[in-house]
Every structure is written in C-alpha cells, then in structure tokens.
Length: 284
Image (cartoon, rainbow, N blue to C red; front, side):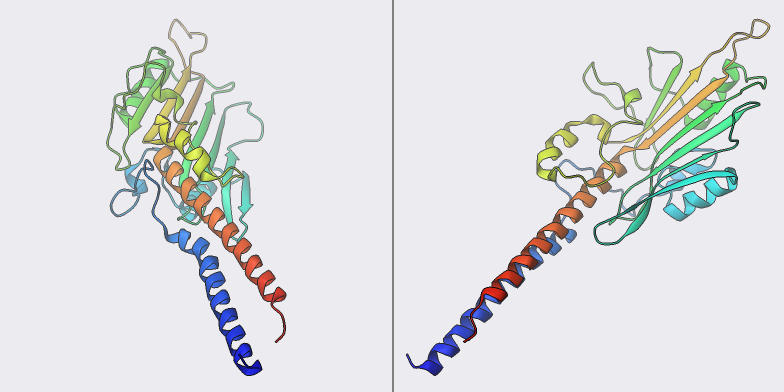
C-alpha cells in the first residue's frame, strides 16, 4: 500500500468511526420520543381536560401552569410563594405554589399548596393541598360541611374513618371505585405515589415499584373534616383539609421526565466520547 493509499484508507476509517459515534450520540436523544414503558397509564385521547377533573375553589387538577397561577393570584393576592426548578437543559418551571389568605390565622385562614408536573411534557397541576381553619370565627356545622363535600365531589367511597371522606376518579372525571388488597387504602393515595422530578436512581430500577403501586393510577380526593367542640349541642367542623392528586398524570410525566434526563445524560456522555476519540486521532 502506497503512502497516498494509506492516507485515503485512514480517512475512510475516521469517517466510519465518526459516523458510528454520531449515531451513538443520537441514541439518547431519540429516547426523548420513545413511548412510555409498560404499566404506565396512558393519557386520555385528546389529553387532560382540567375542567372535568376535581377542583377546590376553582383550582382544578390538570390545569396548566399559567391557568393555575392566574387562579391562585386571584384567590390569594397578598401572600404567595413560588418555588421553581431549573433542569439540566436550562428549562425553568414552577414546581410549587403556596399561598395563604392571611399571614396569621386569627379570625380564619385558608392556605393552599399546588404541585406541578415536570417537563418535558406540558406542565400541569398534579396535586393540591388546602387547609381551612375557622380560627376565632364561628365554624360551619359538621353536617353542612359533609353535605357540601358530597354535592361537590359525589358520594364518597366507603371509609372506616368517619372524619375522612375519599373519592376516586378516572382521568375523564368519572367516579371509580378502585380495588386492591386489604392493606391498601385509596385515602392514602391523594398525597402519596409517584415521583415528581427526575432523580439519580435509574428509571429501570424504580419502575417495577412504581408500576406496582396502585396509588399511581387514578385521581384521588380526600377531605379530612376534624370535628371541634359542639356549639349548643350541634357538632361543628373548625378544620377542613382537602388533599387532591392526579396520580396517573404525575406518574406519566415523572417517567417522561426521567427518560428525558437520562437521554440527555447519555447523549452528553457519548458526545464526550466522540470528542475524546477525535482528539486521539493521529495527524496523517
């Protein structure tokens, strides 16, 4: 082989090597478009319609980041705190909004915390916690609160605890009655279940546990009505806690976020390998 032929052969090898490394680098990016793993609930056809999902005071599960922020600002204009996250790709999103009607609960107070799903999927409300305390004001009667909750959310699921009312829905807003083992309680699901943001543990390791968790499927609402001292013999409810979770959406978007993060990390690593290989290539 002549010197000229050797040079041509070497250039061909480098082109082939570069092509292989470039294709490998795209592998991670292609994962961004991959489908969700088996066991992860698919979104309803046409996506989430927040208007069909449960709400408290007009703040619905499934709302977009902008929609929820508009409602919270209208309801709680004075005391509002926003927690944001910044992803590795530079995307900044609102993770939580917490707000209160008043700074000090004297006459009465109404506090709320709103949790959002992470990107790359559209950012939506996945959880709402609301606490209502009558303070020094006359609290509503227990019967009135129960009637109001049933009117809003429908007939609750059977519960052994009369102070805890639980509802479950599908992602179309239809009431469901999920079943599971005797040690599983839908009342535990509104604030429990899947992750919200990507973590260090690979998805493949945590997915079996997440898919086995029955709390990661469905939409749950729990109302804890804490009775106080009766007024003139009438039971009252000075404290009401409402906990809501769109767990299917939280699970689905959490998995997508983890896939996205892992794909970016893989692509970065493979790009670093490609750069290293190019730097090692001899000058011919």
